[in-house]
Length: 167
View 1 (tube, rainbow, N blue to C red):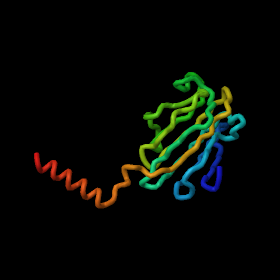
View 2: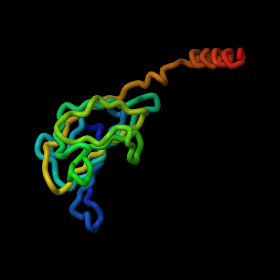
View 3: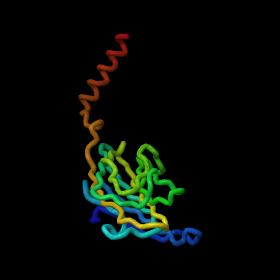
View 4: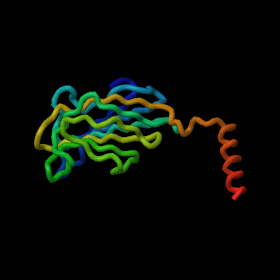
C-alpha cells in the first residue's frame, strides 16, 4: 500500500457481528495508475471475521485490470456460506454482481478486466479457518472504446446514417 490508498478499518456496530471488522481501501487513477493490493497482514495469516472492500476509481475513459500474483483464501468452490468458505468477490458495481463468480481456494483467478471505470474487489473471512490471503497487481488503462477522436465519431455517424438511409 502506498500514498494512492485511503485506508479505513473500523469495528462494526455493537450487535451480533460486533467482533467482525470492516475495512475499505480506495484506489484512484488520478493519484497512481498501477500498484499492488493485498489482504490484511499479507503475507501472514489474514484475520478472521473480516470484510474488506477494495474500490478502484478510474477516469471515464479507463478500465481496471487485475492480476493475482498469489492466492490462498480458505474455502471450497463455489465458496458459499454453507461450506464455511472465506471468499473474494468481484463486481463492476457497488453492489453484488455475479458476472465473475466468487473465488476461494489456492488457485489464482484468471486476469480480470472491469467493464468500465469502477471496480470492486471484496474479501470476506469467517471465524472458522485461516489462509494467507492474496496479493494482486492492478492497473488503470485507457478503454479502447473511448479512443475515437471527434472526427472519427462524426465519420461513424455519417456512415451509419448512409447505411440506414440506403435501406
